[in-house]
Image (cartoon, rainbow, N blue to C red; front, top):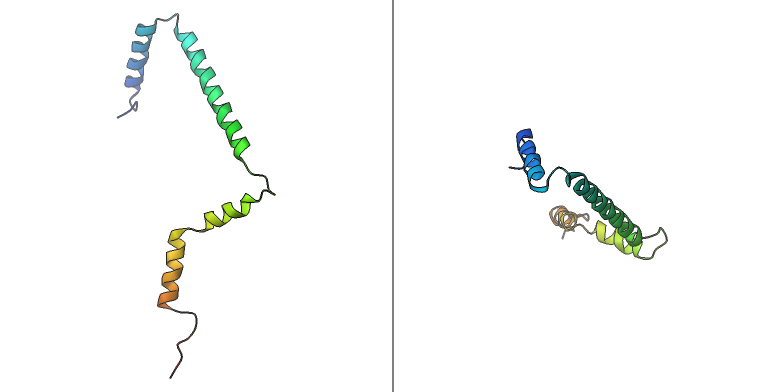
Length: 91
């Protein structure tokens, strides 16, 4: 359902204004913005801490695991089973 209709958003704003009062709304908006900014900064710092440098030894392991896609492995095995690379030997 959600807030796809602009009328829903307008009703929600009116309800919030009635519950909190118009004097509290700017404070609530500032607080929400502050918390959003802190969350974004936290995520950015976490990503920075967890990123691996170019010379990190785990990069090779990461690349190997990413290339080990089970779908591709099964597809390659099926191709080899159906049409082997070596021609069959004649008796």
